[in-house]
Length: 145
Image (cartoon, rainbow, N blue to C red; front, side, top):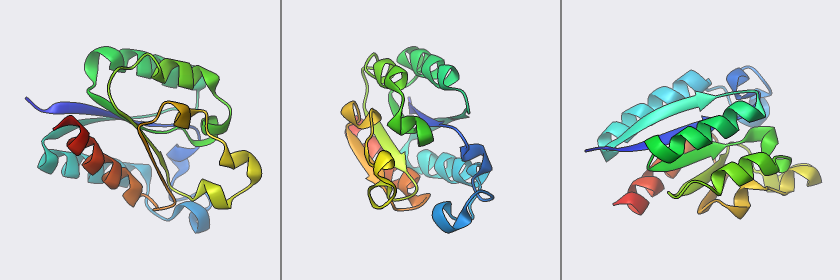
């Protein structure tokens, strides 16, 4: 039976490919989802993709993942730097968590260099563009093997 990975995306990622392409690239979130589903299939993983601009919806999705997911890949976007609520939700999840950022947050504004989510994440991938999602899936497959 395939392991299920929830891939969660925070605010403004619905505009991926349109918003600041010089920072985030030209791929859309739909293209990222398609690539993750294809790679997941080759790795023996099922993927469930979710995006919300609302913190509470992300928290509730993490809560549901406790019963439906073997691992979580999360790009919390702006909530990376502000959300203790998402951190607390992730702390209730018993499987592996990998944090992904499309841009290199460590080369950006100082406020973007702190992550609450990193306090729970088993790994962090930043600055590798949307390829970071695929790298996270590969790592997740290794962690769950």
